[in-house]
Image (cartoon, rainbow, N blue to C red; front, side, top):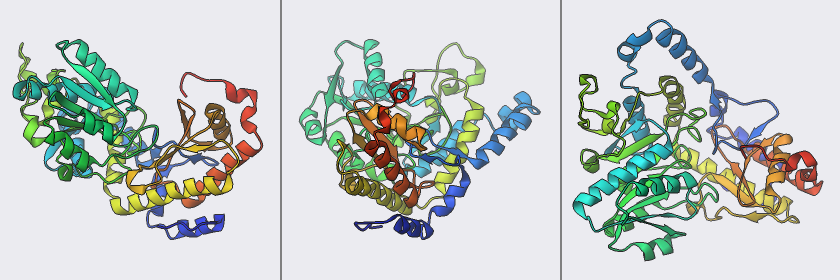
Amino acid sequence: MTVSTGITRQDCVTLDAADPLAHYRSKFELPSGVIYLDGNSLGVLPKDAVARANDVISREWGTDLIASWNTNDWFDLPVRIGGKLARLLGGSAGACVATDTTSINVFKAVGAALDIQAQDAPSRKVIISERENFPTDLYMVEGLMKFLDRGYELRLIDDEDSLDAALDADVAVVLLTQVNYRSGRLWDMARVTRKIQDAGALSIWDLCHSAGAVPINLDDANADFVVGCTYKYLNGGPGSPAFIWVADRHVNRAWQPLAGWWGHANPFDMSVSYEPSQGIRRFLVGTQPIISLATMEVGVDIALSVDESELRKKSLALTSLFMQLVEERIPNHPLTLVTPLDEKERGSHVSLRHPDGFAVMKALIAHGVIGDYREPEVLRFGITPLYIGYADVWDAVETLRRVLDEELWRAPEFQIRGAVT
């Protein structure tokens, strides 16, 4: 959807009235008086999740008790939801489980991929990742390397050109995040995966900032390993379980390093030694968080019902509108666009740098526009098309203009940092 120059708020209201995705807004709890542009960090509450939580707590846990592992299918819940996530991600040529956190799944995926390479190409000792990757991905790689042969090396790259230069015969694994958490820059998964595999390495993609926001087709990309979270654009709830997907060609070869009883071939045999399950269940570790899984499934079901081409079209229109309005309506402030203008290189959030970005974001939040702040100096605005509209974007930019023009951010209370920024 093209947004013309000189757009007015009434134009935005008209676009909202014609929006084919507008009805999804009614599926979520949205506080009055708030424009929520932080769904790329924590998605909002799906209304049906409340009833699901009540049922799993009151009936399944409260009445059926331990029998629920069988009668309410608790035991298969991570695999069943994983199947839905695989469909959402276009991953029929692999399998998925909803489990653990992204950090833990990164550890499992890197460990499994290195184990495969140790069998096939033991001289490959280099792991590549982005310098600008979300830090936990890098921390998990560093932690894993401490337990492995000291010959392993982490090689950091900045863009596709530096990736090309870094891909040599020593590279075992490449870990990339499809949409950068700070800038919103989008990798071409299919093209980059092909480069990685042509160089003899295995790919691991982190989909935390793309699952539920941009169309993904793991089959077309011929992906190897994928991880991601569900509490952002999938609206799974705070700390809801993450997921790991593994291509069919790898799943029964991969020995992931966290061998727990839920990944055992026969967990209730209580065997002294570990024998991995066949298939994706081997990527489970310990007893699963059933309440979180059950409520998270509601958000996944909503995502599966959406026309992903309409979702992407609206996402690009809203992010383009945001950037255009900032350029037109706030020209005289030190705002620097971080997010790519090229739609093919953009996810679903817009990031702007400002020298006093932390205080500016605090002031915005106090005036009803909730985004978030990331070092250094980055104001980050998540555009979730299922519950954000064109008039919301207009109003958010207008609030940003007022905060900057009137220097509201200079108030002392906006200089104070809490434990979470």
